[in-house]
Image (cartoon, rainbow, N blue to C red; front, side, top):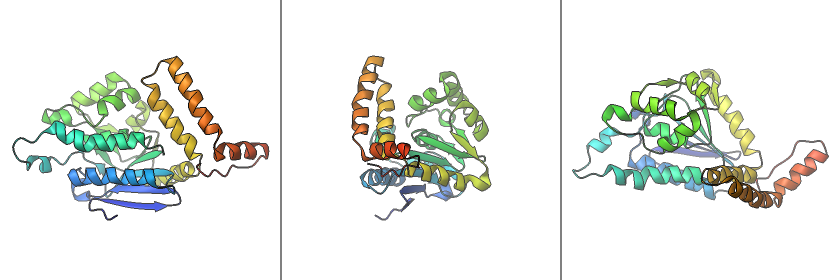
Length: 261
């Protein structure tokens, strides 16, 4: 499939989606929202994709919604419908993808761009990266799942502080607060992301996906329900080729060769 606003490539089990509107710091317009969603759908269908990296072209991850694009809309434009039929589909697609998603935050992740980064499973930030919720600067509330993801990562007090002050949070601060998993030196950023991606792509992909499913479901379950669901998913994992290989490798004292099934 040919894309206009993103780049998509697959290599050694890793699919890389690059937001590619660098002249706007990769601001989202309707086409980029739709194409990014389609790319994640393609990753879900592809057996040869076992890990996904989402990053931005140029010096930014994403500056968020393209406000100039919104400003040009006809009178009567519904922000709510724009979210429901655009960003919500993207966020749900990411969360439901049972393959690890790495947000490789190479620069600023602002507004909706921050929300998309938070929807990933792992966030690797360049030391030059920063995060900002700029919604309040234009009289809006955070959207794109920010109100769900961010308090769970850094606590409500800090999340609310970010939302109402629109302060820029550095990569180092984001690491201290728990927003990101690792901060990499700018010169080693791509190498660090690739190391993470290759490690995840060569791992037990089925178990990774089931773990993601269990943790997402656990937010809405009692302990008893979570325990029961874990048992159900563990039974599935125990029937996998990866489980048999993992046990055999352990007994033979060698590194396992997981197939992702």
